[in-house]
Length: 416
Ligand code: ATP
Ligand code: MG
Image (cartoon, rainbow, N blue to C red; front, side, top):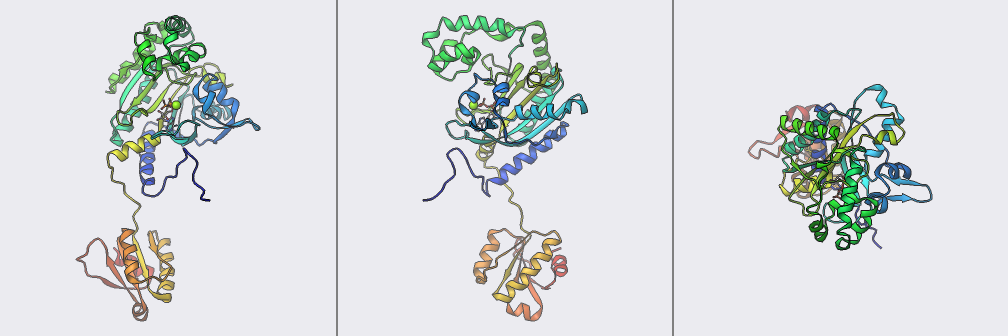
């Protein structure tokens, strides 16, 4: 019986991993330019943390979490809750009035695997904690836009405001009344949601529901003065920074903790897995989780699988880590001498590949080509006898091969 990876869990093997590395290092570069610091967080947390922050009536908490029921712990389905838990636990708000943090890693959700939708997937997650300023919202969004730009990925940005505890309940009532008139025509999920989480009806993907809600009242017309002013300034900031956006009154996001600004970066190239990044403001959440009063926050998460798919669609050339030298040792003694040289050269910082199996020259040269090594050093019986190996430049076929002393120093200087 062959054991395979679980459904929805995927290996990232050489050939693909280079794209992941490229994505990660590009993201780190952009995040650092925006003054963000990395934080690394555990994968397992108390179930309560997610139930309290994400919300009981969300898809994630209702049906997508990997929970060890006997231990009451859950594999994180997203990063924000853990990051805030750490922020509070370590009193990070004392060290700096505004913390700008990012984290990168796997998340776990039990959903139906599809292209761009896995059960273990990866997110780049960024959060700014301790500022209410609308400039922080537009700056954070502009950072996302800059990252997509540098990756060469075309996305569109949609934004909305979800109001706050002062204005959302009023809007919710108006929406509930609107939904009640169309209740019978809604899908069974929406029938349930209309009781537990009526705003979610607005982003239902079922066509009949979409038809029903297409003229639903917009929250943007029911914001309080404070929220409306804030949202206006967020848009001013985006305009100032040259970030294009579209208003989407139906974007409510699946998580309960959002308020005011919400946004998504959307791609047209991945079918129904269209959201490549999503986030928003969550001003009450830190306090709900036991943190200091009045500590606002905003963040977003980018789905790395979807970004990698988009990079693959562009046939992006990936640079595989370069091998400097391939040592072809022939016969027992050739392999033995090459073995020592490889170690000495690696100590001096060279990337060296070799084969220990005593294969034929032809087989070894094939490997050297595959490794795309810059140079190959051949060490056979006659080379051992003369004390000089044969060094070939694999990139410049015209170049004469050289005889070099079998010492790390000599090889290094012959390679230039
Ligand atoms: P979706 O509507 O696609 O289910 P979501 O609203 O559940 O997304 P978030 O919780 O906001 O997603 O997560 C942020 C990003 O993480 C998403 O925009 C997406 O790119 C990515 N993501 C979410 N769930 C998955 C998954 N199961 N597999 C791969 N990527 C995912
Ligand atoms: Mg989802």
